[in-house]
Each structure stands twice: as structure tokens, then as C-alpha cells.
Length: 114
Image: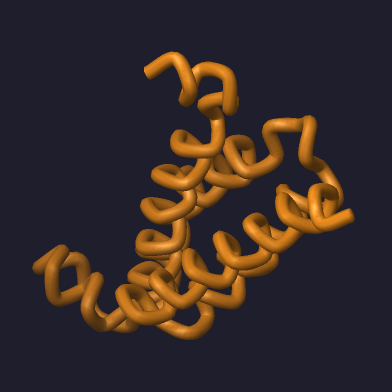
């Protein structure tokens, strides 16, 4: 009886752990985004590569958010990134989702063979 619920519990715990890690390292908005992306990927689109596609879109959006979201001139990129919280959170979210998408892309059979 517990066999079907065990993968769901593992998935829920994994999503929660990654969300907490994103919150601790990047911020609250990025954690909400990570949680939403992970839940959608694991629950609603488990057979599609939704997370990988979403990660590519997030990575492409970083320069746009970085250029549009800051009020200071283009002098120093490091100061500009620190001024732009949205670009920082989007970049952190994109990096985390890239790692998670690569980790989830390995099928369980391939993991057992390693």
C-alpha cells in the first residue's frame, strides 16, 4: 500500500528541500518561483522537459531584467547587479533550476548503472 505514495513523498520532500535551499541562498521571490516550477514539473508535466525549457527562458531573461531593472548608469556591472534585486533573484533561480534540471534529466535506470 505504501509503494505508490513513497515516490510522491520523495518528490514533495525534494521540491521542499530545493525551495528552502533557493530561499536560503538567493531570496524569497526566487524560492516561490522555484517551488512553482518544481511542482508544475513534477506534478503536471512529469514526462515533458518543462524545467529545462523554463530554465533556458530564465537564462535568456537575465540580461533584459538586468538592463531594464536598475536605476544607476552602466558604469560598474557589479554595483549595477547589487542594485537590481530582480536580476539577482532571477539569476540565482536560473542557476539553481539549471542544476536541478540537469540532475532530474538522468533517468533512474542510468543512476543505477553508475
